[in-house]
Image 1 (tube, rainbow, N blue to C red):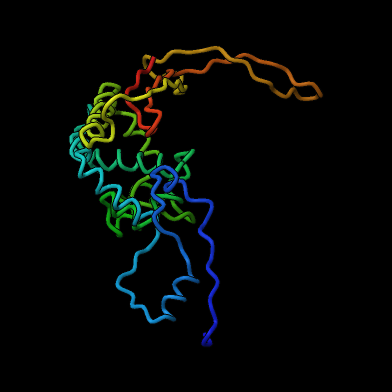
Image 2: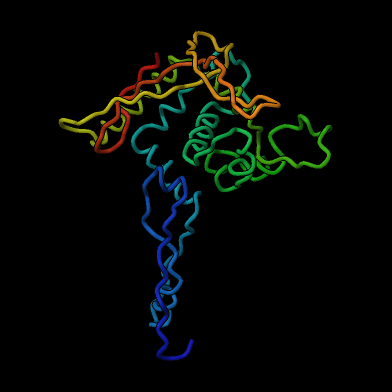
Length: 253
């Protein structure tokens, strides 16, 4: 860099990742121009931090530990399961990460989550488990597609779905107590009630159903037809604090 040349400052990114949007922690951004300007002025670099999902989630998990939420997660047990290869807390944390990352499908987890060594180490897996998996099940029939992560998305889905509604209700209430104990929700609050559909398979025990209509294309015809179908599951009502957007109570019906 020649003397007297002043680097132009680059703009901060305008589209944060799904994790940063959900955690709302946008404390730093990449600014090569400003860094070059500081180095040219003779400033020393005291420390460096990687702006990655792993670094962001590391502090988030520390936050959960400090407010007592980790202790509640560690008490979770899968009902009716005698031998556990993976602790229940790891299944819960993996599903929480799926939500934070905005995952729409379990099948995308091996690519966007399970194969990320840094994130998996935060959850409790080591690099060897991420590379070759926890077991050799299915290795004999695997020819071209390599393993991605310590477990399969089906394994996560099968185990996380074993948690009972009572366990999930208790966990939710403990989360609210932890947040209230931290002082984030004190005094009078303005709340809003929001309802969302929670779809389940038809075979899910205790679920309800609602009839809906949809437009379908009929082979050989230009006009679309209307057909009726059933959606199975529950309607979850959530009471949300308007100011902080934190959930206060929920009721599946």
